[in-house]
Image 1: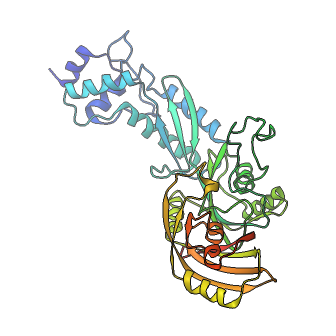
Image 2: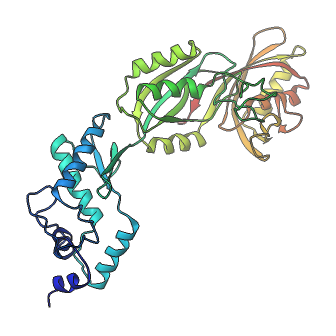
Image 3: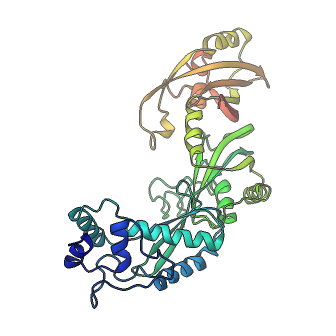
Length: 395
């Protein structure tokens, strides 16, 4: 008795399912003109439920093509949804009859529908990092499209203070509104993440976004010079090409000119890892204007520069961020420090230091949690600190 006969004595299979199990390909292939005849009349195929035929497959392809009209893409891949119980039957059948050349029903659907869509649209199937995935279910006829994320790389400038890095939600109600935040849900109305992310989300028709940056600055700090590198990760975007000039204009308009972007390009997922790795080994360049409670003499400034330049600072998590950061000790290096007078009691420091060093605490000492500090060395207290990020080095 042939293998085909042995299989059909136990399982009800259509002609195409039987052929792909034995030979690795469906007879006539999907989308062809070959007849579909169930090998056991009156019974439904246990694997495809008699859905692996030209009519059903063309219906699924047509439905997919209609959905795809709403998306901008160059490459795609097909994903097939197959019920678990059918997968279990198929695995049992293949194992029982030792069918070494068998092609799974899922692979048959993916191959055939992918080929058909590629022929109609003249666009290639790409299995690694496609622009979108077309999920099809021949058992229900359902189709849905899942666009791959789009990654926008650039650098942002922050022209004024009063803008948080990410939304600063109320620590008590987390956005719902309470007496602590004046029923606003947050302590500041604007954030860099929103000023940079929302225009990108709107222009590419995405369902949402994630904002990634090389570090972060304080609410009252500015970012100038080279700017801070960022990536906006767009979730399920309808479009994939970005007008970078229009995007920069949208950011500027939304922020009222307080936030700007430059060097914008559409990137890829690997740029996220690169962004984080480069930040970890980079150094930060700051300009810090400090007003002290008294005038500082030249001798004290010389002592300050010689003590801090090249030194390793022991810094415990600042009191101001303990609510959201673990309390631990960091060791960060001050690579360079210079100073010039800008007023009777005012000094401007040019600081180059390791990424992750809290510069404000380097100035005021945070009640001994940062050692050494400018305040400790000079024996005086700062009354006002204005921080400006000039850029990151060693990216």
